[in-house]
Length: 589
Image (cartoon, rainbow, N blue to C red; front, side):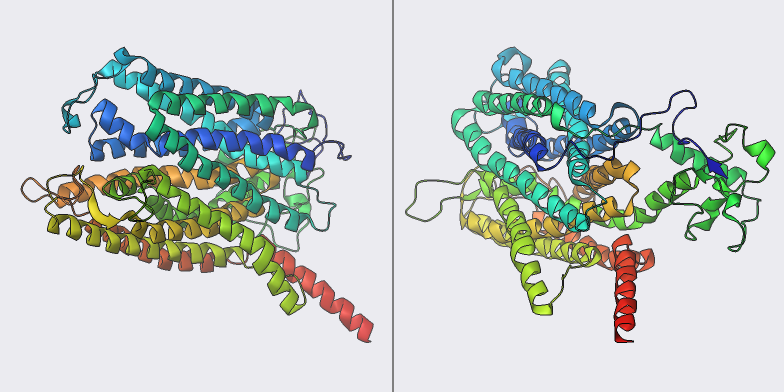
């Protein structure tokens, strides 16, 4: 049974159809969109990377408590994109969501800048090396956390919508090379974003280390203001897609309808498509065979009782459209694959401990050099590795492989994700080995009780683990985002873009749990594996636990990838290859 108007819209208001003439959008919009995302990343990552040192020195939080606070902040920052995607797809639209989010980020950075400018809103300065004696009041911490909250809200609106909004400007189904255009866009989008993070890890961190927190926090606030202004300035050029009714409500309706209709029998394949309730212009006249128990949500049991005279479902909680059913199926299907990225995100989230490691090591480029790389700037090697891979993969590896084979070559997104997870395991194994050597050297030099002393070992030993983390993120993060975007219907594109961020949110919460469990369970006397003094702790053992979990996760991914079956791209390529073979056979005959 067909539904003349879009079932996801109200009966009273039908939104104007999207124009088929692409008068707006295109490459001309990219500078405004990518600049907004880039400045937001420079600002937010420039604040995050050095924040552990700010919390220890100015707020008296120890390494473990400070890291726990940062875990929660990053978790909130990565969870909010799901909320932003929901509001964007269902109510506000991507343009308005990004605009409001830019304002929220700017206000949060202004509040954070005020904590550095006004002495009365934070504890008195730390005297000597025992900064743990400095205690912040509840009101002082509340102001600090409110700044974190506003920044998280802003990131929640910008990050999921910016990627999807950019894809909206380039996505053209009439273009035969549309799939390749989007793949290239995703890669270069992440490369540009990574350049922004690289600037944050170097320039912003250097300013904070040498010019202080006041200027170091003030510059990100200015950059965020510029980001918002640039984005709004490009408004007349954008393709702005219409929003639909609450997507999450539609997903909930499918689950409820499938349960209510659980006793119904599914029609045979030979039955008419009129047995299923679908949109008038929908390509889905019948649902797919996977997760067939959800198909009962769109089975018409009685035309007179289920369908009104206007063609609408009389009770959307008992009868849903085929599109709604397939949207929920797409979400349910990717959950196992999505969950495999959580472990890699847990590994990446250990950056604050790596900052403390670098801060205790010789950060000079050579024995004759006086310049020291800021401890928080070593994260730039992760970004350099990520950017290098994207450029080599897009401009060297794929063209060379295509030239050798004589036809376009693409590495399966599943292979890329799996390879990234394996490299993440290697990164933690290397991290554990280097930390074991660093700690042993510190003890041999009599520095076990002095966490602020510089161990006579080059911090350049940390570079390999940063590079491996960058390669893992380039393969898995980009691969997962591309995977979600291609597997989901276009109506869920912002949610597709926010799923990896949701994984980061879950990862930071789990990382906090793992950290505290290891700290409490490994306690012997007054010491444990996780100590504020990293020379007395056993962070190498902690890293080995993460490495073991990462290896188990690789095996888990193989199982999830196999059970998922072929991706949409693989199905599409099989159809194209089948048509080509038929054409060749006709030519031969």
